[in-house]
Amino acid sequence: MEQGILLVQNGKITAVGDTRTVRLSSDVQIIDLQGKLIMPGLVDTHSHVGEGSGADGSSPIQPDVRLLDSLNARAASLQRAQAGGITTVNVMPGSGHLDSGQTLYLKLRDGAKTVDDLLIYDKSGKYLGGIKFANGTNAIRSGGGNFPGTRAKSVALVREQFIKAQEYREKIKKAGNDQSKLPARDLAMEALVEVIDGKRTVHFHTHRHDDILTVLRLQKEFGFKVVLQHVSEAWKVADEIAKANVPASIILIDSPGGKLESVDVSYTNGAALEKAGALVGFHTDDYITDSRFFLRSAGLAVRAGMSREKALYGMTMAGAKMLELDSRIGSLEIGKDADFIVLSGDPLSVYTHVLQTWVEGKKVFDRTDAKDYLTAVGGYGASSDRFVHIDCFDDDFGGGK
Image 1 (cartoon, rainbow, N blue to C red):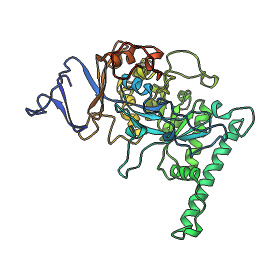
Image 2 (spheres, rainbow, N blue to C red; image 1 turned 60 degrees about the vertical axis):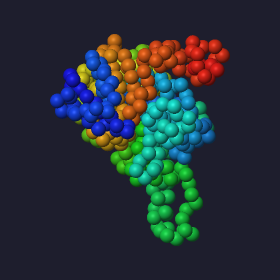
Image 3 (cartoon, rainbow, N blue to C red; image 1 turned 90 degrees about the vertical axis):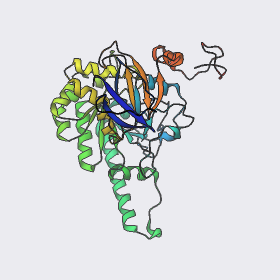
Image 4 (cartoon, rainbow, N blue to C red; image 1 turned 180 degrees about the vertical axis):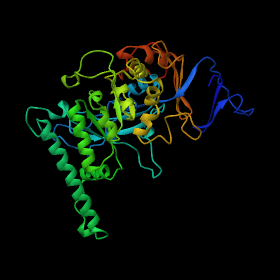
């Protein structure tokens, strides 16, 4: 819309249109952004901002571990994501386990003191998140101990736990109202029961084409909802992914390096998945991709053959669907949360900057603010949590970040 108007009230979008269709009352605060571009806030389906940690080295499968109990809501990395135009993020524990714990879906609201200030709740009052699974090199951990050592053993261990969860669920069902017949409470099994009941989505770290097909095999066997994460070799099995009706969140790394199993990663993943008919989103895996450069992922995908429309959809609405939040975020529609960003130009141009980021109708990033500007353009220290005794700003904190 060349002369677009976005009307926001109480954190929600109340009108979207232009000067011919949207009537403004006299008490409306008008912010003139002529010459700028407004688009929905970006949705990052896989990140590690907040410095949270999940499972430990005691076991390869730990579904009872909750990232809720380790995320630092005051971490400067959250501001780094705001500077990149990210408004909603799926924060995950690491991939060094077959299952490293429960993830968190967060809104990057400003001024958070505790993790509770960032949580997204459903209508029942439950905070939302998925669960992180992984296969391939990271989770194998060759070298003994409790970890599998091979790909086949990895799948055997995962399958064993899902079967236990099915049995645990059946025992609860048979017990009915008889408390004496209930099995001993098992937090790990409770989490996996949520998975097989479709109440918690599996976000599955996977790279090689054979590992991708293994995930699809497990998903078909146990019927859980899954989002494929990374899928470095998606271009090899794009048709199989689309046929399984499973969404894929891809990462586009703009510098060489990484692990051997991702040697065949291709920028054409987005184009291949789009052509096959799969739902395609993007993620940073921050700090693998710096959150400040998240929009660049869409540009790289388009350069490699993905359509402009689907690339921008992948940065916004596709991610919202993967987190099952598409009724609330992902597009500029009446009734949705007022999560949007202001850009200096075309979103796919490397010369474009995120000027402002808004979450639920509140501005959380402004490039004209000196501190926000430093976060946007500074090096590693600009998003470090370390307080220093002397900084560039005269503030009330006795030091800066």
